[in-house]
Length: 344
Image 1: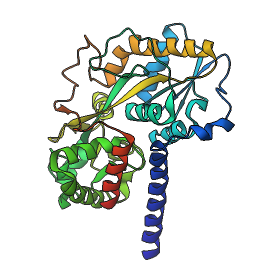
Image 2: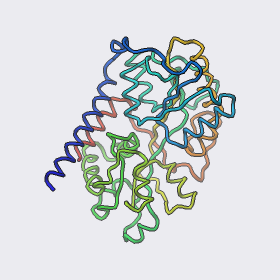
Image 3: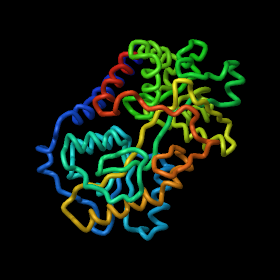
Image 4: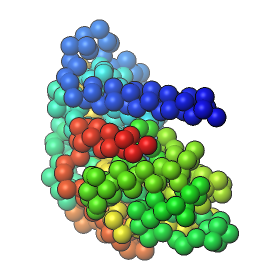
């Protein structure tokens, strides 16, 4: 048992070091490293789109592009958030992607640190808030508590109303949550705790949650709901829209908007500043198409209004949407990751 525990701690430490490496890259301009890379290696006939988005968002993007004359003119490749973030900072303008759909805080940090990485977009749709000229949001992820309606009865525990309750020892062995070193979904949970209880108390709360989760601390944002669906865990925290979809499909899943609030992580479209003017023009057209014509499809899964005139479906919209008190940056993510790691 001691050797197994030591091995788990070692793997966790290596994961965290790798994650910190990605964040450290974001704090330093790496343009000097880009000279040896070839620019825009994607096919001359296709726009390469890189994304950290969920399957639901990818399907909406594909459907929107295909229905508006771009079928066969693009490829989409998906990555984990930290993996794609690492590529952005390490490769800069020399990324093979022509266009990205990525967490907005990474896009902003890359533009600032790498410099001139993205071109200005020509989007006519008016956003509800002011955004930089080089990207526009396409969706907003939110987190929620969810649970297996059958298993929670058998477990004989109450449905938690707050994230803090997940640290209660009565939920030991019943909880699954994402790990911030592997998934930005966990940041939604950690933002909510810090905002409500402060950094010092957050460490204590996370310590209790991680103890209750045990081996069900997941590196994927979709991991917790998979565990809860399979009955390997009873209660989880993860992407709210996934719980909404599974409940609507008749699966034994229900969800709770925690009293700490439903926090937001937006994902935005940006076009790489490559030398091929024709490809840049086509990529900008596609980005504009997704933003202008794909939002209705996105709103079916991510019911957060981002543009003027959008109306959310009150039946599925979060009841307590909040934003963190500080701007979301790679540096803030690093700070919150360190708080999370210190709680393990």
